[in-house]
Length: 198
Length: 198
DNA sequence: TAAAATAATACGACTGGTTGTCTCATTTTG
DNA sequence: CAAAATGAGACAACCAGTCGTATTATTTTA
Image (cartoon, rainbow over all chains, first blue to last red; front, side):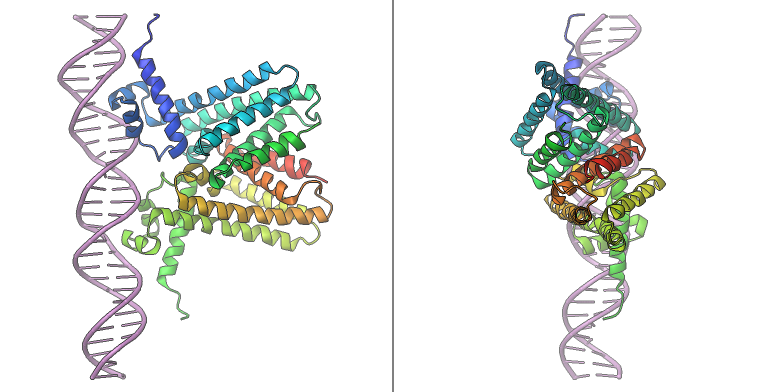
């Protein structure tokens, strides 16, 4: 079974397009037709792949967060000895990307938590899993920074990771309505550059 | 011109119902018909009052935030001499209310920032104004707490108010997907009870 | 003050278009 | 050949918004 199946390519294309469109227009604001047309896949195939829009959205959520986990883990692995620097570098890269795309979208998790967090059980579960795994990576990074002495140790890494994820979500929302990455930079500076400092 | 106009009653009813439904189902997830049926007002009247769904949403945003401003200002005015206690009491009341309504909705501003923050210019403006005025009230409260010596003064009240609003938005989103007010309590404790302490 | 003219508002059937979902004949695959 | 995948379209429900008419208020006229 070496062959790359067309089905998997189609699925992947649908998920990529789904991430892009749901990010900017939300769940109810994006019709299946729009996604289908963009990747030229008929409806019948879609329902064969995903079963429903709701399931599709749940898969999109998983698909969305994975690259971020990989990237952050990558930065942490590279910079042996300075986890805090790795976290800051990761953020800097993310902020630069958001400036490139003119603040469009923000964070799919945040947007969908607000929109369907209490109407779709399936999405709610997917969001919970994804957000927790993202928080966990931050916990690891902060924990390492603690043992390196750059982050204060009178609070648990878990506690700070939770606070960080919350504040960052809020900052991303404010970025969208202020059309500026200033809230992000301010958030980074206030927490990583001050409150969390050893 | 003492007479209470039916038009104003209808507008008020529409706004109240609009707040309730948009909170739980979002902008695109809520049809006008649903709102109209709930308050028994015909389509034509709606378009006389508001012109479009988008304008209606912008008015809903204003209508939503006002009571919170009044309430927080009220707590601050009452408790002369202990602004920090007033802030905590305000939060405690809000958390209790969210538990009563079983975490449904969360914050309309947060939800709409994510959903239409970068697709509707009109809503974006309304959100910006509302969120800023909410942040301003927190700034006043924190500033008073600083002069009372309960909150640290090496950071500006504005900076802390911004961080607070961001973190609280994030905590509200996580409340929705975790179906628990634990994130809210944790957020309150971490910032007001620790990082912001004098 | 009474009647007429004018303006403002109320109303809901209707429009053109889109939604998510499903069906089914055809094609592809193992 | 049987099973799975495909693709085009059918489907009813719903969407935001419009428009001509009916009703009610307000102003003008006599």
